[in-house]
Image (cartoon, rainbow, N blue to C red; front, side, top):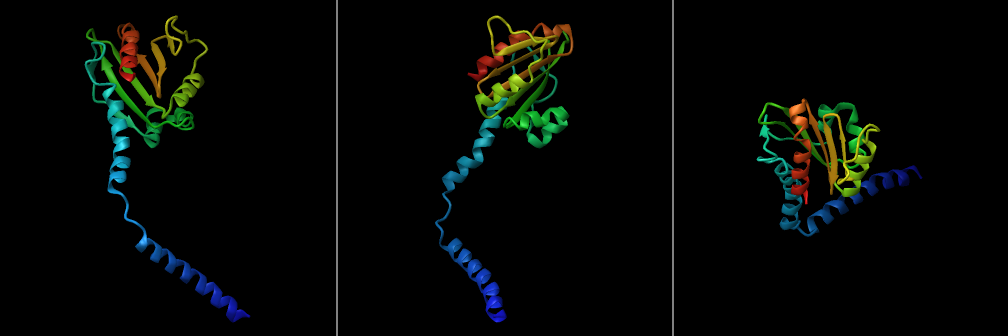
Amino acid sequence: MRATVFTLLVAVPVLLIGWMVWHARHAPPPDPAQEVVAASQPRDEDARLQDLLRLPLAGLSAKGGVTLYDAKKLFDYIDGAAPIYIERHFRRLAAAELGTADGGELTCDVYDMSTPADATSIFTVERSPAAKTPSDWPEALTGPKSFVFREGRYYVKLTAFDGKAEAVLPQLARELKGRMR
């Protein structure tokens, strides 16, 4: 009896491995066209995300380049809030520091949340009780030195560091929204 059990324990894995090797050799080759599409899709989405922040934009200048963050690097940028975004299917963040002609400074964060439903979800969760909704834009919120909105799969946070930059936030938000359509 022991010999039979031992033989089965040795033979089954050997036969299984042999079958997997044979099957792999006889499988059809992968379609190179599908591999190219799969490989280029995230790059295309990243390029579109970066393109949303290309200048000129609301008369602002760049204080540096556009930085992209994936889920792992998001923790470096927003620390403890990252899980809230990741749970809602965060795909990528494009962040830029911008300046006004008169010396004001602001940050522009465009979150690609994968789907419009995910963007709506983070918009709802992040809503501050003190935020106000502009009368002509129900998908936007304003607060002291901030303007937040959602459009399609994107969730956008604009944060001014001074009154000069705060004055340009509505114009910047409208230009970004127009680019997202």
